[in-house]
Length: 421
Image: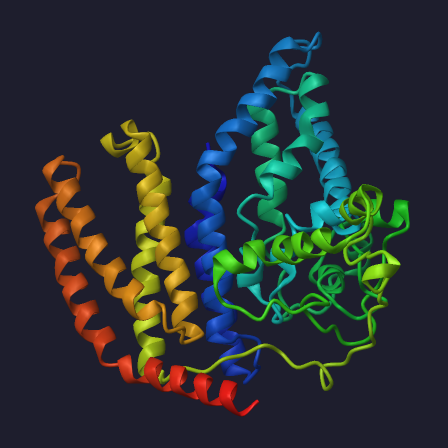
């Protein structure tokens, strides 16, 4: 059972509560474009994870089946406790190495790109991180821990980490702070302050950081993000920007030895011919300039409207996995996932007022209507839902058309800046 999917309503309820409290206290913990991008990356990670998890689950099950300890461990409460410590221990080492090895950092950097810190950041995940992390848990399969038990425990560890992504909670009682990961500990982990970088890698138990020398208490105010700002709201680009930069550097490096070192050493390590290693610079909230863009209020409302539709569609896609005729067709499942990702990409393009989104947003709305018609012909959706979706598509076409001049003005300004530089 996928507990995380069923926890989605709780996630959004808590995000709503946090947002309400920050508004009441007049705290600027949320920016609309940042929060939507965080949630878009979370949606994309969950949707694409449907396909990736099939492989990772099969590998774990296969190793469990051939393990000499298969069937030797009872289904008792103390086994769950033991498994919890084991899974949390291996999570610590995955998470730590994901910060200390360049090629692994590429699978994790997405989670740290947000320059805000709120509950939406917890859902901001790279779409392929599972391909790296699942390997660390395979010893548990060899040790004979039942796959069902493991998947339940690993989801509990993941769910725990949601609430620690907040600035509203200062400190927990001292005994709790000493043993468990808390918002204070995890704020440090998301900091780009030099003393905070690569600290507090714990999932649930902060004792691992205390044991292995990576613990750092929260002292000065945290500045959030990564040392090289991604400067984009496009979820596809944010997933692959690190790899593009790394690939460009690998093409410039002299010799295979240095190329290998760039993959296995700390993120940002470069040989002398590429400038060497640059030390992180001291930052404060006053000196750090967050990436931001502006669109008109009406266009923001359009984005919110479209995002709610995407969220409903994505949740339905996830909840009805294996419970609908749609899932009998892998091609259709891939197509629906692709349409969701396509929609998320367009939202990022709207935030940045990219000229290409003018054509692609119209295309997306039309494609959505066509998909509904196809599904109706296959009798997988009700007529009422299909008609409602087509009406929504027509409303979207008209609504988006009101803002064409905003994109054209942005393009004209960009051309002017290019000519005057």
